[in-house]
Image (cartoon, rainbow, N blue to C red; front, side, top):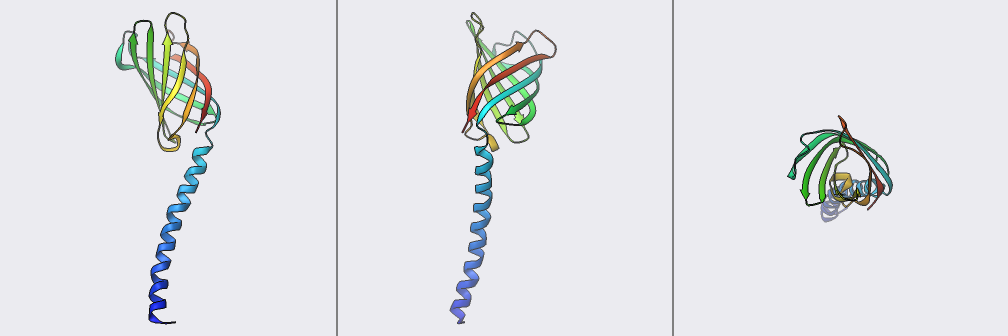
Length: 153
């Protein structure tokens, strides 16, 4: 083996190790990210701060459990805004695997409460989803909210 062959091998080995170190976590992350597809149920219990919050401020804080396509749990914060007959809730759920932000639009005239995923972090980056809030017991202490729908990537 010539000195040049030795130098080439010495330089190639660390490059190969670095490439594998980057590729393996990326492929694992990809497999974790793709698992979040299908039916989702989100159950939240919250202590409401003030029913009169209408300016986008914190309306309540509590805890949510996600089951189905995603299995996680963590703290939740609701930010509430009201314009006319529409109340908008931005529900931010911070779980162990990342953060998901939901947008719940409540028609105060009809009671319709569709939701959508507006953003996600970590394992939930790129998550999309929609559904309906099927339980809205804002009048109880703690308040109870249940959202059902589907998510995908």
